[in-house]
Structure formats: C-alpha cells, structure tokens
Length: 71
Image (tube, rainbow, N blue to C red; front, side, top):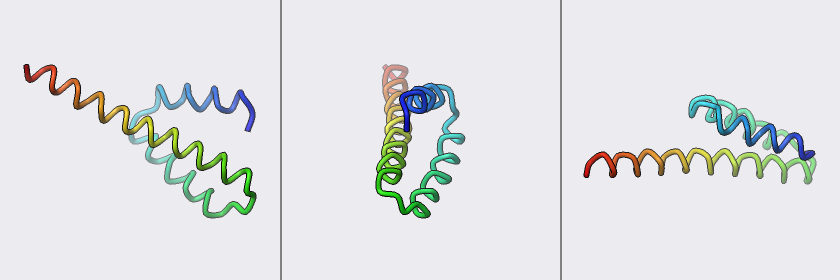
C-alpha cells in the first residue's frame, strides 16, 4: 500500500467515530481471513493495529478527562 493510502487512513482515523472504526475493523478482519497474499496480510495487520491504537487512545483520553473532572 502506498504512502497516500496511509495518509488517508490516518486522516480517516482522526475523524471517524468509534462506531465507524469498529465497523470498518470487522470488515478489514474479514479481508485478513480471506487474503492469501503474505504482503497484503502484513498491510492488513498494520491497518488493524492502527485501528486498535486509535480505539485505545480514545479510551485513555476519556479516562484522563474523567479524572480531571473528578478533581
């Protein structure tokens, strides 16, 4: 996957809702199971990692905000 793809993915992750990310994540996981190409599978796993990282980062942000509001 080329540089433009990754830039587009990063931009989408920044603006997509959590629900949109999870929906797309399920679709991408399905692609991973269907793919036989080793390089493509590596790229798909990378996409899934970025999605996971975004979900975790958002959860951490929510926790930080809750803690700051509690004090």
